[in-house]
Structure formats: structure tokens, C-alpha cells
Image 1 (tube, rainbow, N blue to C red):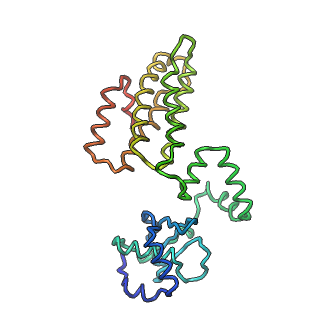
Image 2 (image 1 turned 45 degrees about the vertical axis):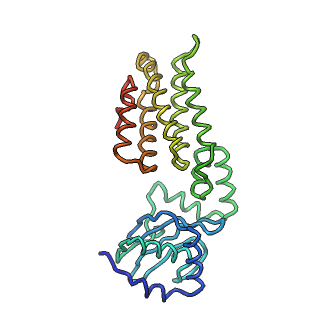
Amino acid sequence: MAVRIDVEVFGDSIPAAVGEAAARLLTDDGVGELELAGGGVQAVVRDGGAVFQPWVGIVDGVFTGDCGCGVIGDDLCGHAVATALTAFDAGVAFSGAATPPGAVPAEPERAEFLDAVRRLAPGRLAELVVGFAVRDRLFATLLLGEAGMLDTAAESGLADFRAAVRDASKATTGSRWQVPDVEAAGHRLAAEVEILCAHPATPTALDLVEEAILVWDELSGHLRDAYHITRTAPEEISEPLVGAHRDLCERLGLGSDEIAQRVNRLVERCNYDTMDVS
């Protein structure tokens, strides 16, 4: 059941220092997009160089906050208050029996890893995260994104994907190429498009994905012709590319008419039904 919250009473209950901190965060546009969770709401909040994800909701009849900033006890921190005020302005309906994210039992396949994380000292955990980020570009991109350190103007993701598309378009040039060359080019496209989509969505990224779909459609014909010796089904590459196209269209907020036009143009130019994937 949704609960109506008296915003004025809520504001009066907040200590002055916390209210001032929340006001500063709101003035600095530090509260990100709201996300419903467990009957409450959470958001990424940027406070100077630090990033937090506070959750607020009504637990056992009490308006409660859960944030990793270090505030202990029943008091709400400035990050939680800023999130709450943003939710009030947005007209979010709060459940009368919410459950904080940390109170939800972990899925069996995640429980062991969560327990391991809790046992590690922060410094050691940081070393492991950094070490893995250095070795894995997708993880590194996701890490920077969660920390709010990816800029929409950054060219790294675009440059890497553009290079993959360019190399794929040349995979069958000359007379010495083999089917494994086509498969390798396709798998590289699939890997790079996942990294690309971990970056902020941009029109340029969408255009590049459309170019990649056309390049792969042409290459996939070679796999279909050599189906008896291939180890890769064309759909293994088509699906992540088309999925990335759908994802970018949604994140860019394109209208249904523009999306339909883009899809129809691709369908008309594809000779091997690359766009015909679920």
C-alpha cells in the first residue's frame, strides 16, 4: 500500500546541518536518476569527488535511509535526504512496508562472493578491483561508469569500436583469408559493442553500431556458405549487435517513428536477415 508523506513535516524533522548538505547536493545537481527498489527509491548521488547510492523508504513505519557514506544509526544523511526530496518532487509513491537492498537475501550464486567482499579489508578489496580493471576492459569501463568518471565526450570507447568495425570490413580482403578470420572479426565486434554500450549513449555510437551491423551482415554470408566447418553461428554476433542498437535507441530517447525508420533502413540493406533476431 502506498503511503502519503507530509513533506513539510519531513523537512522540519531533519537537522539543520543535514538539510543544508542536502540542499547543496540538489543545487549542484548531484542526485542522479531515481530508481524504484524494494518499495523505496535509490539514486546515484555525486558529492564532490565521491559517489554514493543511498536508498530511502518506509521500514516498520519509520522513514529510513541506507547509505554507504558512514552515517550510523537511524539518522538520515544528506545524501539520503537529497534523494528523498527529489523523490517527493517527482511524486514517487512509497510503499508502507519497504525493504532496504541490503536486507534482501543474496541469490545463492552471489552469496559466497558477497561474504568474501565483507571479509576483505577495504585496501585489499581496492587492490583486487584495480588489478582486475587493468586486465579487463569491460570491467574497467563498468567501474568508471559506476564512479561517474565516464564522459559522454570521451573517445576511447568509440575509437576502439570504430577500429573493430574497420578491421572487420577488411577481414575478407585479399586471397588468403579463411573462415576463422571471419569468426574472429565477429567475436571482436560482439566484445567491443558490449564495452561501447557500457559508455554513455551518444548518436555517434548508434551510427557506428549500425555500420557494424551492415559489415557483419556481409561477413555472415561467408559463415552461412561454410556452415559445415564453422564454429560460430551468425546469430551469436548478430544478437549482441542488434541488442546494442535497441539499447542505444532507448537510452537516447528516440521516438518510435525514428527507431522504425532506422530499423527499416537496416533491414533493407541487410542481405542475410541480420536484423531478424529476437
